[in-house]
Image 1 (cartoon, one colour):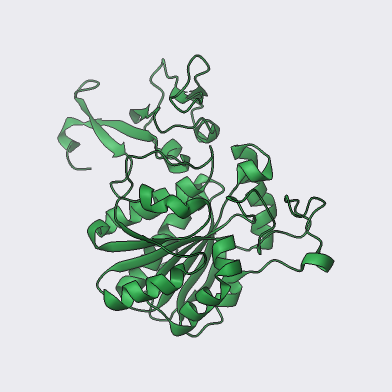
Image 2 (image 1 turned 30 degrees about the vertical axis):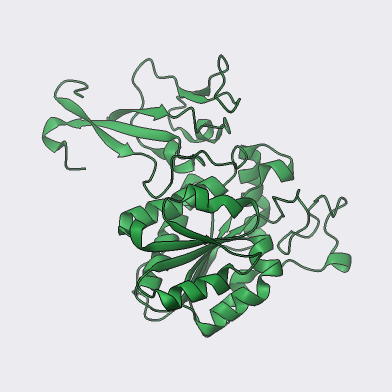
Length: 81
Length: 261
């Protein structure tokens, strides 16, 4: 199973929650403990077990291009993609 | 950076270079952001960022020139196709596109879009249809659905009083000059991916000089519809898609056969 992670740019995230509705692993939650500079609760990846596959579906629906997606690939394939 | 055993991390997705770093002023969950992103991704992939000129409309996306990292012009309300006509004729080697909402394109700009399509201008139009006037506070637009409540139709659009919505793809597909006229929706991930393919096809039609191309994108307006971002996407799927059927309304015979948007 592929493995990956995402980073959410909290300067861009507006807390619309759309990413939380599409994650196949249900790993995205709203961070209710903090605010972005614009005053929204940002989305965050909650993935203690490393279940994120780096499928990038969250980045497809994000209206603010706030999500950067990484996936772990075998070293010999690195640089190909 | 090395991750797990023998694995290294690979960048799968990041914000397209054709968008600036600037955060947009759009409301949370507004699909303008998705549309901007798709156009920017396509221009990145085509390697045309430095040879593309966009034309911004009047409406919520009036500041599109601040968000796209490329040459941009700002047109008077509804006149983006006219400005794009001039830009394309003077600089035929540039990719020229307009980005227009339904109020801009289907109301005050109806004449401009009809004549640009009729002339077969070799430009691409990205048409955002969210069935409402967003910037001015949620009034009825030419595309507002029968029965839809807006601030100027508080008891719903009454077809006896206000008439029927305009279906721009159906209208423009009748134009001899139109080469590629399609409607897509942004209500879920699968449809967003199909929309991106259509945008790519539309720009390729322009690159090949085949004629006028337009991609209509059914979009949401959570703020003026008064619902959450997710509910708004569901509303697009349940109400707008039946009223504005998705599909390819006109695909010129010379566009590569068998390649589905």
